[in-house]
Amino acid sequence: MKGLYLCARALMGPAALAFFVAPTLAAADDFRLFMETARGAEQSVVTNYVLVTEGRRFVFVPPPKWSVRPDAENKTIHLLPEDLRAGISFKVTLEQNTAQPELKPEELRQEILDRYPHAAITNEFKCYTSGAEGIVFDVRRLLEQKTMVSSRIAFVAFGGGTVEFELTANAERIADYHFVFGALLSSFRIEPAATKSAISGQAGGLK
Image 1 (spheres, helix red, strand yellow):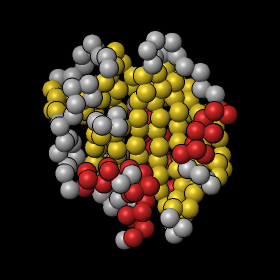
Image 2 (cartoon, helix red, strand yellow; image 1 turned 180 degrees about the vertical axis):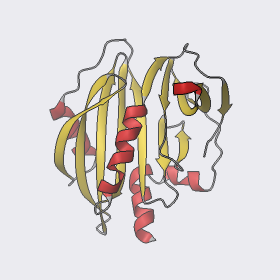
Image 3 (cartoon, one colour; image 1 turned 45 degrees about the vertical axis):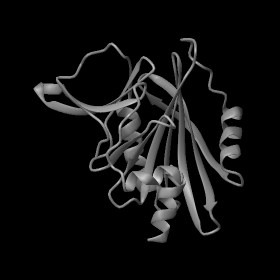
């Protein structure tokens, strides 16, 4: 059980652990998370999660049975499985102009190592989401001198900003979650805020 706590802490940070005891959160006016249903193939109904922030919509489908928690203060979305053995977060950073930022691998590597001192970057490759190309880094680090954890961190640039995704789990089990992480990236869509595809919606903290 201690290892589960450490992995959850590695993903979310101490302040975000309050989500476990306060599951329903009010999102800020400029950072709203809600559910909507949309028409899929062959008239099927698909449930999407939508983040609206600073004039943009970010639509995604979380892994089945994972909870979705908005952290409006840090402009981050956290996704957690029922057993808390892993977690995924993503954060959107918007620029003042609409140009697509350049992803510079050397700067991103240094950003990761500044965030996680003494970590080791073990792999680097390209990824794709919402028609944009990104860069993925696999990272291993020792948490509190007790638990070896691994993270898969993806940076994707789009016109007007960047989005960063991070999967974290025990190093021995990280491969079990690579598929769900890839599925989340594949489902992710970046849209103008004016897009109206929903036939119903629900606001607030979600599970």
